[in-house]
Every structure is written in C-alpha cells, then in structure tokens.
Image (tube, rainbow, N blue to C red; front, side, top):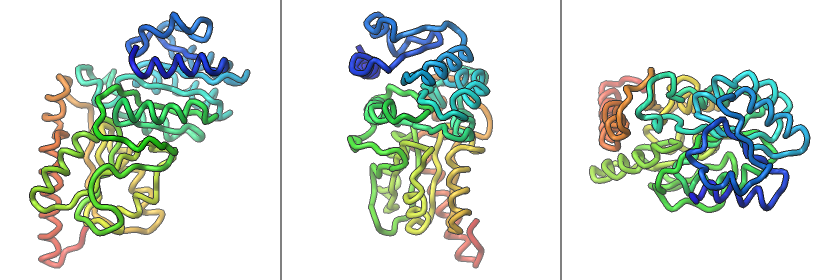
Length: 316
C-alpha cells in the first residue's frame, strides 16, 4: 500500500466523517477501497456527478475527498465546484491526478496546465501543490481536517528535499540558498519542478551566483511575505511553474508586487501553450524546463540586466 492510500485509510478509520470518492481513477489507491466499506464510492466516469454528490455529503457533515484526472475534475466539473463547493465553502477536497507536466505522454485535452488558474479564481477554494510524495503527505494531514475546500495537485514523485514536517497553508519553505540577506536570484516554484529548480541553483552556484529556492506549497493562500522578501533582497525573481503563465504563479506574483508597489525584475518560466507529449525527461528538455535549461535562462537574464544597467537602461 503506497503512502497516500495508507493516509486515506488511516483517516477513514480514525474519523467516520471522511468519505473517499473517485471517478474511476484508482491508480493511486488500488488496495485501500476494499478496506473502506461504505466510506468509499466510485461514481464511474462522471466528474460532475461526483462533485455534486460530494457537496451533498459535505452539507450533511461529511469530509469528502474526490479524485479524477486533473484536467477533467477542474474543467468538466468546474461549474459544480464553483456553485456547489465554492459558494457554500463546503469541506470538499478535489485531488487532481497527473497535473501539469506529469501528464507527459498526453495531448492537450489531458494536460492540466490551466488547473491552478481555474481553481484559484473561485472564491473559498484553496490550492495545494506539493512538490513530491513526502510534501503531499505532510500537507494532506492538515488539509483534510481543515474544514475548507481545496484543490490538490497530486504527485507521488520521490522526495526532492528533506521537507519541514510542520505545515501551515500560506507558509512557504526555503529549501536552498541564503536566508534574510541579499542574493542574486530567488526561484519561487511549486510542484514537481522543485527538483529542477534545485538542479539549476546548484549549477549557478558553481559560477558564484547566489540562489535561494522556495517551495511555496500552497498557491492559495500564498506566502506574500516571502514574495516581498524576494523582491527586496534579490536582483531577479524567477517564477517557475508547469502551468500557463497566465493566471498561474507568475500572475499571482505580479499581482502581489503591483499591490504592494514593489519593483523587481521578474523572469517567468512556464507554458504559453500546450507542450509536446513525450516521456517526462524529453518534455523537460524540449520545453526548456530541465535544471540545465533553467540555469541558462536565469544566467542570460542576469547578463542582460547588467548590460542594461551599463548603458543606463531601466529594468522591466
């Protein structure tokens, strides 16, 4: 039994309010359903029905975790999430499977690279994007019993770092680089690209470039204090994400900086359109999201900034 389904079974056995629903998506819970009894329901390929059912159960005092492919749960069931979960702020958790770049071999219809933007736009819906399996388990223990609706980007990737075992929504963790002082670059990221961010930071450090890497964990609520610290103490802030640049982390950071009237050079690294399907390593390479590519893109921006300053230009 993998850690995630062990966690679900533990929650079901420890609190009879917890219900587990899935839309014929059991790749991450093959063993637990048979042990959950009436607390597990597979609705079949019917994401809208699943969310409506979950909202009804939650209105009756249940804590409901729903599961489906990320692109389907956020797009097919969007109106149901908005009306049945978001407006009444019911404790329903929407777990999206193979989100972002993890849908590596699939085409545009199955690529959830707009999911964060869709879910963060609904009032009351929070967004948790763990970087790996350890991060997922740490956060889910808190989220399940928070009493709040959440969208979760599921991942069972191997741990990229030794995570802080304490978890508070809206509080990020600094996983590499200097703290509380000036540095050349701050990489803000979430999800599975944390590993590539760390690889890029290691490459840049060999050239004397100081890089702080931040795992944001939740994008709603987001840690605005760490965004503002990056703006004050960095020459360059990088927004790294496997999501469309529109309405994802880049948009969130820019909204924060404008609201707080902070000026800093920002380098967005993400998608402007759907990616070409392939095995994950090839997708990372082709879309210039590998550690090597990220390091090069950051170095190129730093060089261009120095050139602008040299000729008296202004940073944008």
